[in-house]
Every structure is written in C-alpha cells, then in structure tokens.
Image (tube, rainbow, N blue to C red; front, side):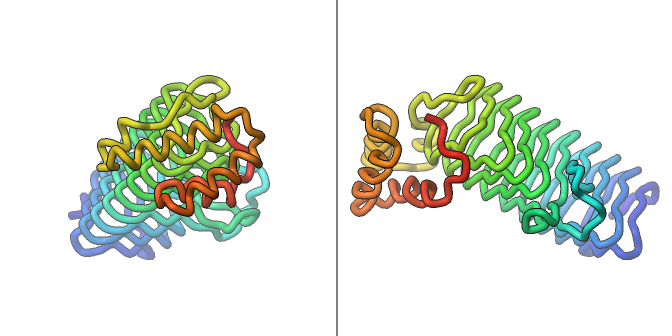
Length: 256
C-alpha cells in the first residue's frame, strides 16, 4: 500500500490500509486514518492528524509551518476529519501559538486545486473551496459554505453557514449565514436560495430567511436595531437562529 519510492518517517502512524503514492513524504508525528489515499509527490508534515477515507492528491502540501513571521518553532497542530478531498497544489498550514495552536478541517470538505488554508483557520463540514480560493489566518468557515474560484478572505473573518462567495470576491468583513456576496470588496446580493433548495430547505424556511435578510439589509435599520428584530424573529423560527448565533460571535462587523 506504500510505494517503495515514498518516504515515510518511522514515527508516523498510518492505518494498515493507507495508500501512499511514489515520491510522497510523510514526516514524524503524522497520524493517518483508515481508507485514506495519499497520491504521488504530496508532502505531509506533523504534528498532523488526518481521519478516515480522505483523498490527498499529488503535489499538495499539508501541515507545514505557518506563514507567520511570529512563528518560532512552537509545537502547533493540524487536524483533518473524514472523507475530505484535497486536490492538486493545495496548501494547509498548522496553527500558531498566538491563537489556539490548531488549524482544523471538518468532514466532507472539498478543497479544489491551488486553494490555501492558512494558520489557525477552522473549516466546518461540507464546505467547498473552489480553485485558488484562499483563506487568511484565523478565518472561520461554517458548515455548507461555498467559496467560488479566486475568492479571498481576510484574516480573522468568519463565513457563516450556507453562505456563498461569488468568483473573485474579496471579503474583508464577516459574511452572515445564508448570504450571497460578490465584488471587491464583497457586498451582499441576496441569499443563497439555490443552495438552500439543493440541501432540502422547505419553501417556508427559505422565505423566513429572506425576511430576515430584508430586515438586515433592506429595512434601513441600524445594525443593532436589525439584529434585535432578527432575534425576535428567531424565537419562532429555527433557521433564523443561525443569524443570532452568528452575530454573537462576530469579530469584524459584517458585510453590509
């Protein structure tokens, strides 16, 4: 299962059925779960924990040192869940001591070619980063968000669940759940209606989300007033609660 031309450090821990292609390098303190396939010419550096049934394609760089000038060799980590796809030339860096020391990726994530996940990022489940999308350090991406090709996210921003970033978007503020943004800098252009329908959201739920969006962006209310009104709406509407939970953890204000 391990090509003889690959280099696997004796201190790495690989499940019995892990496949490693030719000329790949797996360093010490790397743990890889069952069913994972590492293609040729990939480099995985530890401390890194990779779960089950992942597919890591050729020329990807996983778990290397953070691109942070403050980094001075501290022991930091990368954690990757299950069933993720990491395509060609993807770069994923470990965390820094200035944050919690961990870069984390959930389950069922698709990182297309040339995407970049910087230090201390946290990516949820079922997220898609299309070709050449890039995350600055300390970015949080919630479940089911989609970043189109060449989308860029400034450090410390948060992308809410089910949000959609259009091609080439430059995000410098937090993007609330369900919201579709586009432009440089990114601006809101409605909700991700098509994505919600594909994920089985009922028509009533989509309409409720649209009403919350109108309060936030079309009512003329100040941000604090709009948030208070959405909080009242969330009392009787589960899907709108994602907005209120998001506002409570907002670090860079929101795209508005």
